[in-house]
Image 1 (tube, chains in turn purple, green):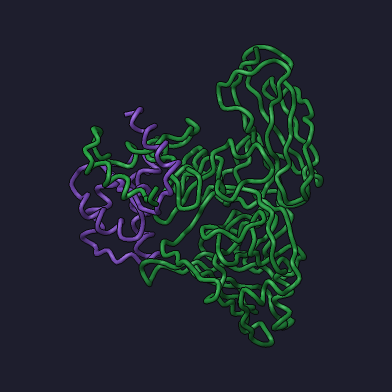
Image 2: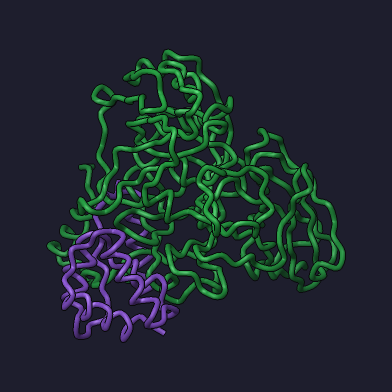
Length: 93
Length: 405
């Protein structure tokens, strides 16, 4: 895929790029739908990939709680539990 | 050639039956930036080189809100080009503002009156220029060990530009400040997607607001402020980290009480007494912590990448900066810090600017080189990370492995 990447990159240099957000594909696992629908509403999902594999279960719990309590994310308790579980299983330590 | 955007490009290619398939993930479709192996695996696999409108390809850490860092090679000069300057937003609703529609309101309970300025009004005021570094508080957070959660920046969440604008103190003079006023509070036009997300609001102490070089800038490196850098006007707070440099500035309020918004009271704080800083923001102190203020002394080797070969006698080089006292020296060690050789400093663009430096390497062989800057008030860099919960003020000496042939 390296060659393709270079071709694409060369094209980007000559074509004014729009601010189109590219889809970020997270690991396919139970709970991904809730992550995409809730987390992805406010921010791109690369935020989730970025810190892996370091966050412990407690760190992911705190991160989801912060999104709800500090940033006002409208996520109900059932979805929050599913999201925390997905993050710990797929991007945790 | 018709103007195409990336969506057109992808769609057009697929429709034309180009043999390679549509990429299925962001990592498959753009060039990979060169990143420090010390960064988390997650950021090293998800970061791509990606061009925002009007920008060169930068290291994309997050698309929305956009957080893009500058590749190190742009730091070989003291001035960072506008189209290569890092982009950092907290909130994802970023309106495009028309100059004619923009108004800046000035008031608050700590002011004697109220005023509203147009861009024309602002430009009619005495103009001041300052060359100053804008560095994200969390620059190099991704290099923290142990790991600190957040935007996992490498070395490039910073840049240095020539900013032009009106003095904030002249703007504040339009309303006058009460003697009880302790802070000036700033809000920009960008906002959150969810109403309950705290708006990005920041304050600075009055004494910093009244400094001659604290500006409301409308030009960056001789051009109108680009959209992603805060068009039509932004705050410039030389010496202090980027968190205070409010973009798309629309409101200034004087206050007699400490600003209590989330972004002041809960974010951008450092433990009391851990960093050797001179300037303080005491009206915001708690028993445990204090707002981040001036940048710590720092430097970066930018002439070569990790593992590079260079000929004996050719120069190692980079940049150095601090919180606005001025760089006194940059030294280089090739023996793990036992001995140091002074580098030659480049042009002095002012005490808030990047200072370039260079030093020819004479001794042949494989070696690890390390750079250490010091400023005129005796501050220098640290050999060991000063840990803090949010991952700020990383100024561990930068080192590279090189082979001199």
